[in-house]
Image 1 (cartoon, rainbow, N blue to C red):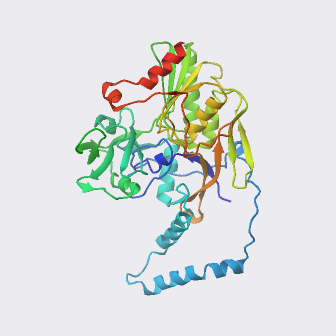
Image 2: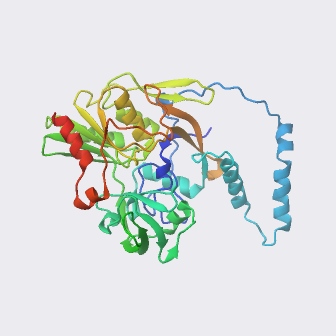
Length: 419
């Protein structure tokens, strides 16, 4: 039986690591414009152990081998026609097989159910395991009319080149990207460290597009950033929910709490999600017990997820920062903190990604299938899918704020904790 990994991701983070091979990376949350994983091997991962519910019992239609044989007669007829009559021979049977899987999943009409070819699956999985990449270092959104920057990574080539949130890439090296699928655009930004790419940027508030030259570099995708603010407030930013996030978060919390802060700010802005088990581990650092998430299956049955004991920051006054780039696993954490009255949310309405996917490796190293298996709700059973979480204190972060180096959302969080 093939192992599965449950991931809750934001569609805004779909295909967000740029890797140097000609494959799409497609899914892992909090990921980056990157290239070439130094190590991209996939290790089988158990289906999240105690954190994963047993499969919901649903009514299934009995399908006999004869039924399947009849059903697939047109498929094999088409397959044979291509093999025998297609003008360019020989055909690539492996590529045809992968295309058939991809088409089958696309027919379901669910943007989060898809096929990952072997290279894409290996590299994307390696990313959430904390590997090093080469690229420009930016979180991107492939679902808009143009490939759009969500946020450049701190200290990355993208940041040094002046790329900003909501910048739209409308051309690459002079080639127009109008009406080109965002994933294909993402792939065109691929390339090794030290090479330079010219991105034509459309920026809100400017009448004309402009060119930006970005020299790709070696990118180590961050998981956690932490520091003490001048007002004796502890600050932690999570960039993703990967394999190393819980360990890094605990280390940061231990260090900050030793300094006896008066309050804590958890920054989940532009964090597109990641592993389900990591989200439960993260929220358990701030909520000591009780329900933190409800998982709802297709037959209406539900499974409750409860906080793990031993959290390090379950008592300290807490404010959580969110914005339209906070999705899935970020929303699980923020929603639980809001519903349980553990802290308040400051910022802008979150993305609204409330579904759960499993990744199942296919036989013969043929990649993996990502399937939506459930939806999740907040502890109060609020449905956030395509709705998002509304902050307790709505604070806009404008382009003018960014230009001036101001962060009104962070300032509001500090103000609330000082009160």
